[in-house]
Length: 432
Image (cartoon, rainbow, N blue to C red; front, side):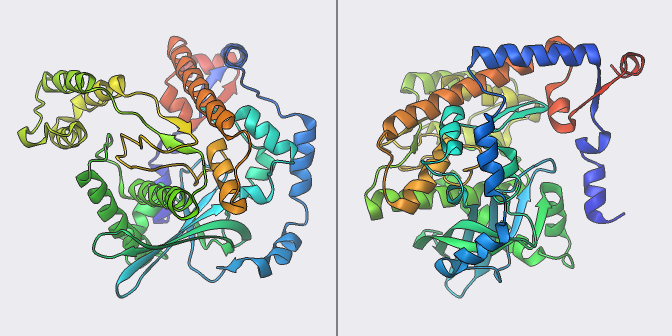
């Protein structure tokens, strides 16, 4: 068995799907329908939207060839994707180079707005849905999967249209020396799962080892720098592969919204996260300090975010959830706004917005359009409010569905990681 295959065998997915009876499957269907009605979530795509998506997936190669002359050709650049094992579409890829006095980091995002634009039925439907809703074992997509999983998926060894964020980073401070955002054609060399990426980091003879090692060194520095600057890190034990993707995407999102704000002076869909009041932060820190075996380092009390980061690193594992929950309780909701001022408190970024997931978030799709057109939809404020409201609905729907799974003795995490298989009654009774 290869190292990569072995890595998958030990994961939750290797245990096979959670088996349930037909009767329980009906209960789950009914509960989902009830929640979709309650939160106005559309499960089925209108036929006009599906027809349009289908039509956009024809003659893909011919269309890419027509586009190449108008784009930056990055097909020879070493590029790869890293995603969960069960990902259906790959909307972001990375490339990295170390030069004498800088790192060059490319984040390539599927060029969804080439296919989905304001005059299309898919755009209207994306506004209606505003985001992909992820329930354990069940996904309601923002865009038709036939589009998202084909031309908008950066699959290996296939040419794809992308929107590339090319960042030249100063080696000492990792600040942006230069940011370029442009339409490109790329060809991913490989699709890695997170566990495969972990393996590649450890195996000097494996393909992409050097690239993963280099990008991890950079991501690790970016992560430490963010923490020093006061960015809240609620998950201190994140593995190396997740750190790579998280830090690269944060850096790209920040680069795009800085460019829109400072270089172009256009409005965009910014992500604004208000801060808790001083009293709320004090309440959270007191609750954390009172936990058994937990102590907040004395020199960090001045900045609650740094206090939480330092505490999470030293606290016993059994208390991590309680510390995270104490913080989450006092955090206001982040929202989308056409003005970035107020910044993003948890990340401690003055300006922030989303760009790296246009397949699953309306905000990213709209920011792609703004970057491409250098123009803003007339109803931008309305779109910001809609995206904020629908995200809240999606989160509440997910919470209530998870609660229901627990009530019928199913583990939401197992269902999420392993999926569900409906079996006949006699077999299901043995496995429940």
